[in-house]
Image 1: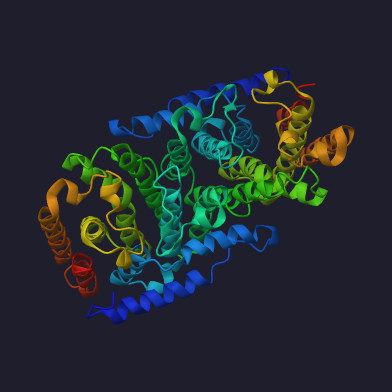
Image 2: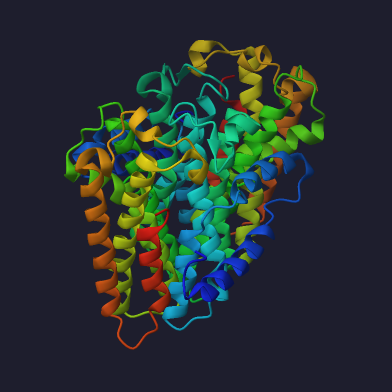
Length: 299
Length: 299
């Protein structure tokens, strides 16, 4: 996010977050070192950290020090990482590379990849229940938030929907396309912002506004991802470009065309900025610039 | 558990539990019906329900109506079911049958089996955070308990350890064997009893005693499982008998011999009964008979 005027704040969040993540250990049992290694291999592969950084900035926006929400921000990244590991499996997307490195099952074998993914969920909950500061209600609220965005009606359901229409030649109807995104990616991005807000004690109205912002940000992010996949270079993405089309996956480009997809991205970005307008009196500059950055990355 | 004198109480728990489980729905989205079907296929395959029933009886022991803990008891069974689905996968134990029916991946395909397993974790948390009665501290305590018994230092770690020594010709050292069991199966059985106690507001001493009981019960259960696998018929187990030896898996029989394993089972059963002795003034008859039933099942 080096193009942002508010880059200083994001860079600070990122530095603090990477340091926290790097310091995480899940076991002291030597016989489980290989499992821990597999987990850290995927966790520390240098992702964009959109979800945890959004969580931290949302906390800051509502008056909490971003450091305070680190355990929950990390929990979210653990859950996101588990979903990437499982999505890459041979039975799913069958990807050999992610972020320019062999995927977990290529490096550690399929069984270990499944289990490393599985282990992340329990460890995420331990971070929230043992390490996260806050009232009991806040922490239980975080668990509830992540439960709903990662189960049948969230991330996992979204992956099922995505698989179901893969191979259909990219011709899903727009309604289904939005639904897949909302379940598969949107729900957890929305939760990331909400978790920061919940832990900062945001009121109903603030929570509503930040949820709306994050929903539109997530949508914009996905559309731009599809656009970049269609036109971008493999090098820039760290994975095969054009992979979606190759698989016959419905994307915002296959459904709306390249120009149509760009217009949808613009509209989502605009709605995200409008949602921030409802947070009068708070410094939303970093979130505003993030939305613009997400819209224009890669171009 | 039809041989128990206190069968009436267990049968009542079981009837209530099965009814609750049967009534669970995870989504109303028609496009996700196949996922829900896969989840219910494995969930309603007629397991022994040791964990949820133990949770209910533990709650009753400490003065709460067993009905009150149904959401958490079900959450535990969901998590147990997810572990069975993933353990059966081709990359893991590669089992085609479970409880006399095709395993999830044989019936629904490998991708759906992975995802059905994944979905159970989020849904389990939703049951605890949304449906479970109790104070916030109690419910967060339940989440923490299950987080620790299902992550790296619990169920998932145990499966990794188990895989690591499979193919070693059944010659693990006894210390490793106990450790595998404690992580893979013991931790969640122990948690099942603790969750019921936590929700019933049991004190430190009661929690300690019931934890000890459940630890020994779980150990006894595993040893007897190994014995039955070595001598039992496929018919009775609903899966291939002798499968452990075939895979070169270390078991209590391969390490201690058949008679040695039976002695270990006796000792564990005895320690379980002794732990109940510390719960003076409470009606532990059903738990005592359960320990004896677990010890002598199949013989």
